Image 1 (tube, rainbow, N blue to C red):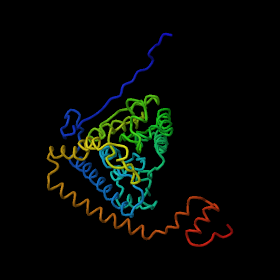
Image 2: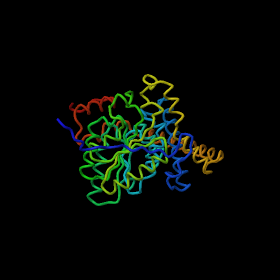
Image 3: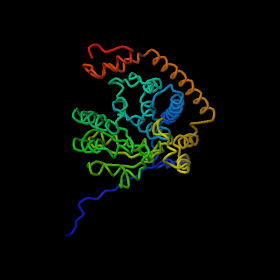
Image 4: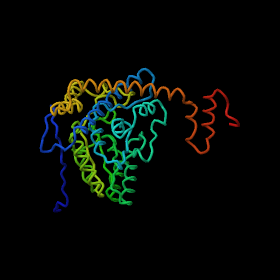
Length: 359
């Protein structure tokens, strides 16, 4: 039977900063020195927050935590490209993106201590709470983006998820729905090479994750996720298109340098040689080299920033611990149901050391 080609596609890739910090000036986005320094500062804040949070968890002062070490450029630079009215729809590792949008270290830590108050936000914040189920938040972002399209708003929503989420039905459905309804949505896939312990090559035979946009009839682009300038520019352009009703999938190639969560041990499934290779492409080191070359960073300014971050962290840890100390653990049994079921009443009674009435 003769065959006819009815569709073809290609995936573009973008890199602006080389690993040594040198820049392609033709592609370099026009950003003020203040904006560039803010991106760097937030990347540094996010990394120290993750490092301290893991240490707190190891001492039993924090619950399970998902650090984003190594993924700072993918999150901070993309969130920096958002306009005030755009929405952030995070997964469970998006501390860096939320910090960029104004979330406090205290709230991030309080949430990790088991306090839902740490995830609170208002409509003015334009950020949803962290989503623990893998991929479900992509559908929420489509809902927001569809509403923006119906209202003809000059705004968009960005959904963050990892490479593993692209293997879920929720993400496929979200991509398809966004295309069908012209949702003002950008999908930011942080391809950090592992879905917990499952390597990228075992998840899909697709050469890129960006090409998964093709079946949904939307555009996909691959970007060096450790290149803050490239991530910013790719996201900015994607947001422009999304606000016009053309959703985009951005695959940011990056690497999870730490564990999936504090319950994970990456030494069980990946080699040290691989980790060392990715360490050479560290997003903060690359961006710092670029800023030093621009004369924006000096040794003195880097030291001052480090001291500021440590002071901020100490205050945030103390405040989060204070809030946690005042919380009533029995609240975990409240608010999940309009009418508390018998089995939950029994658990609450056992927790309080008593017996549930009539149960």
